[in-house]
Image 1: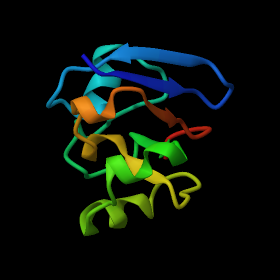
Image 2: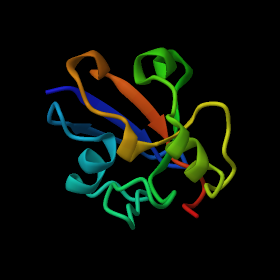
Image 3: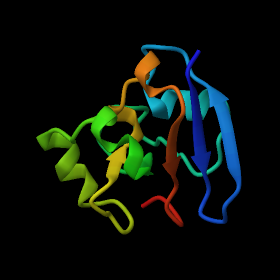
Length: 106
């Protein structure tokens, strides 16, 4: 299974194994990664699963669709590499993915 590293704002790392086909958000929730609230359950209707994709992984995770772009407007301190983790599907190509969590979800 692909491994994903979630890095909290304070630098604490959580490496989880993620089942192919799940979203990065689902992998975080199933592994109790703190800082991924996922209030809408992955419906792209909130911004509480916001992450910053490590620069080395931006091409592999793709760009946000229009709906995700709209929701990112509600995220805390969005950046060029911001994504909603509910919109990134785990694949073998994402083995080693690194994402950073914002200071808080909002």
